[in-house]
Image (tube, rainbow, N blue to C red):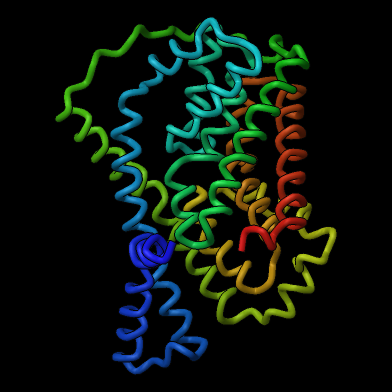
Length: 332
């Protein structure tokens, strides 16, 4: 465990990088213990760490994901139904490093191929909510037990959410054009060189898409970490406040960002005494219920189904937030 802890601290958390950045901040005349110096250190360290980890993780995950193109994923889910199909859809969603908006075209393709609504919604919920890169980044900031618990509860929300939506019998609430979208056949097998090129392109595409959110998120995190008094944060979102989780969800919904941009904010909030459940509820609301993704989803489903989806996912997120706040001592 000692060796594992050292490897986790130096490779995943990159504490050596934090020390190096702190030395650099001091070398330019700033005191890392001051507000300004601490903010600069937090910003530079988190930006470099997140982009380094993100690039490596997305490359590896995209190489694995190249074995599961949409056509193959659809074929694996085809003809399946029930809890097993929902679980498989949720697990396959973790292999797709997509934001909520990017997942909707896959949702359209799966629905057009005749997959049950319950299965497609389990995938739609899981894909932006739980992916392997975000899990490892969570572990790099918090702990492995928390990251693994996040995976489990995220998959539970996806499976239960898809199951509930499927039982509501709202297949007629999907826009007519979705069922007429042409379905392509099985994709050809990629060579190793093509998979490497695909993984490289995915890194470039995802980093290009998320870098503004990462910089904004780290900037907000640095401000919270070094400039906002802890008693102010605790008074608004303290772990003992019953309203902290609902407020976190309401604040997260209007925002649009990948989970990578919310992690630095989460790190700073936890450092100020905000409960883990409150922070996770905020992150989940941003990734799974962002207003832009709901607007895009409204174009392919009718309002009753959109309301049902939003309600089911919101209840799931609130439950998870309350659960983690109640058991936060287990994960620190």
